[in-house]
Length: 296
Image (cartoon, rainbow, N blue to C red):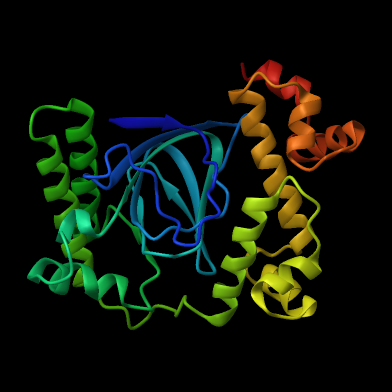
């Protein structure tokens, strides 16, 4: 089953285990649709699972490991395990598909040739944070084709579709496992790991007051180093990141719940209604009430 969504509510657990519908089949496929003026992005996040994404229509921006690129219709992206990344809309509208899967979907475990030959080379490679997938490069075009076939199998849900999905995702991974990484950058830097700890804390406590001092304490670093981490990776201060994340959660709640605007503001850490309205207007160009009205 392909799940429809516009954004994700992020868990703050340490291992970032995805909640799959069937724990015996650790794979989820999401269809994400965005349009200008509504929800337009997924927040920065990371998870233990691997991920394939392709853009079905429109254009999306992919950001990860200090890189950024516009991915047009028909092309895609692979994200390795535990890599901080995000997607957002570029243009008027966009539809993309994400396959998020545990490596055990392919290998079944660690004591076999499937894990050692096709999975381990990828998840243990600190230089392989991710890969843009281009249609004009044959091997990457083959990966995109496999992703599409996997999504189509799930969409049809005919008997045996799990085997088809596993086969196509496995073949896509096998193509990537043979990819050289000499020109890639190391992504498991101490700064990146510290940032992930602070981001986790924000995602778990966004409804509470959060100070730079608290964030620094979580990562065991100085406040100045915490500032440097956010500036280097997100090009913003910790307080700006906190506000952006709160507003991303707020826009989701405005569209997917019947809670009052006052309650949503308070749940997202805005205890002053006028402060929430002003911050949201700067974020989306309209009031929370207008945003809900236009997109319902």
